[in-house]
Length: 445
Image (cartoon, rainbow, N blue to C red; front, side, top):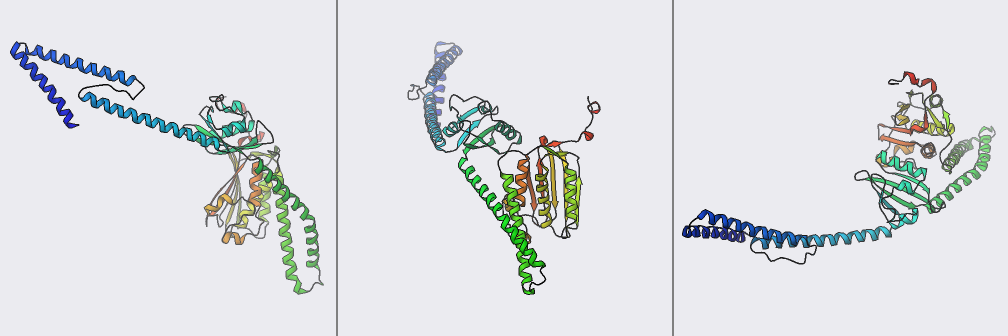
């Protein structure tokens, strides 16, 4: 490389000396230098024109004959063009393999831009949703899939900036149940994953029916057994040696009755039917009742506090909301020492309303928080040993909140306590008329 540049510089110097020699012999040396410079410039422009014409040709296999450093430039450009061609070939092969692999997936995938227009979808998505991979490209997906739940799901996924999912019937066959999950990525783009969960839904329905039927059938014989045990406990003729075992059997039968009752309640909450009714619930009065019942317990924490920050009411079924709130409070009582503290708080803001149960109990390990709402889930260690419940309370809370479009958030630290927060959307909240500001008193009206 250095030798080539040295040769080019020597050649230019030789031409300049030749021009000066001609000017010295024939006179007018500056004229000779100007003619030399113009000739050299014209030669360079001619080579540049040839290079530009060659670059404009799409076929990189050809070349041009160029002297001096122009030959090196042509060689470098040729190598770059060959590398670029090979890179494009590899990218095309990778894209082809990606399309083949995604088309082989049993689950559908749809790429959406910020305007919810379809950029690409695989064969599974087209099969499950009735889309046309090429014809529907560039169309808004909410114009092709007009299910209200899916449209609401897209709006929530875009505003929340996180992952969410929705279950709905296939637009091609109502007997097929689909789960659609939206994953935001990039610059306000979304990836929609579509999965056929018909088989899983049928299995879940069979399980729910079995649990409900078994619980219902067990209730009657267990009630009879409990009645006889109650009579035996009160029977003065019963030998003293049998007193302890019979009382233990009585406690276990009562626990089994509580489990069956919770299973029936959970089965009812899990039954299909969408959202629950929209009756106005006076949450403040409901929490006051739970507060009084908690204070009446024989074993409870020393401080049980109720804080009402809003008079807002909740739309739903009062029995389900009472079941959710009372289970949260009972859970806090169960795992909070007698010297501890429990606070129930009802508040509202622009995002809706929240009911929180804050305790200073033993807390929950971080790895167990995602699983505590599973039925019969038990923690290891001291918290589990102190528990005497059915293991279904938090599962009932989760399903009761889902019936009311709500969600349960759990924050906990072992040894420091836990906070369980029930969040409800604004459309489930009603402000009493007496607490609303008249329109003529609103600033700016």
